[in-house]
Length: 112
Image (cartoon, rainbow, N blue to C red):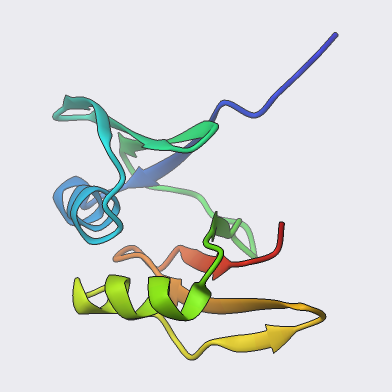
């Protein structure tokens, strides 16, 4: 069996805020747009938003987006209202962290 990750589904009670964040603020292309289900392209996989409450564990998953130049990506995304934190150096790569409007952790990373 050959499995590959196709999609991450985020449950939300504020569909419009998350759709604006992933589509507008992060600039991911919309693939499907219905009132209860939205999909966005994110490279080799998709991020889907599903209307409804999430039941997060003690530590929710973090969505990590690759950028070769983390500082430039942070500057561009923060100009769109992303609210990403400071760029940090870590073992030969850079990262910066933030949260989407529902409080789900996101990160921009240059780690291959």
